[in-house]
Amino acid sequence: GEDVEQSLFLSVREGDSSVINCTYTDSSSTYLYWYKQEPGAGLQLLTYIFSNMDMKQDQRLTVLLNKKDKHLSLRIADTQTGDSAIYFCAESPSYYGGSQGNLIFGKGTKLSVKP
Amino acid sequence: NAGVTQTPKFRVLKTGQSMTLLCAQDMNHEYMYWYRQDPGMGLRLIHYSVGEGTTAKGEVPDGYNVSRLKKQNFLLGLESAAPSQTSVYFCASSSLRAVAYNEQFFGPGTRLTVL
Image (cartoon, rainbow over all chains, first blue to last red; front, side, top):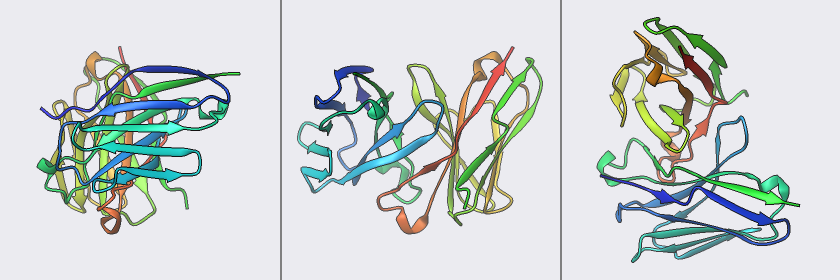
């Protein structure tokens, strides 16, 4: 079946870079996403990348996509304590027809930032 | 503009009781979704709706029913609650116009405990 895999935990020191990795299964996913969940809250879209791109940069965030290996990563530069959250990788699999907007989420990576 | 709201925020049920979770969105979104989030399991799609009067099953629909009588509301029902349905439930919505990159907007969640 379709699956999105992520490591469950990452701990970094404030000011360091964080790299969160993800592997996905549906090579026909048009977009891949990173969502952020802060404690006690719902998910918010952090960034996304179109499948014909291999990199996207947005301020402190860099998304890298390796379509051949179906590997997605999120790099957060100069990580701050406010970045502590759970980060979810997601894909939009083709078996949903691409018209319903459904997403398959990974289990989430809990990022802990130590001062 | 409240975005996506969910009621109630917390609920404790006894096994066999029924209840309805309400999701409301004021963004005129066509698509709405119900997910459950369990520790170590990420988000799993229960049911979704692509428009008023239409619903469809997601990954884990058993034990739940939904209705979308009005475009802005998506109701999730538990007819006979079981302890396995103890979870945090999230509602989300997305716009047809943005379906290509599918930003889903999430509510704050409902924490349900079934004893």
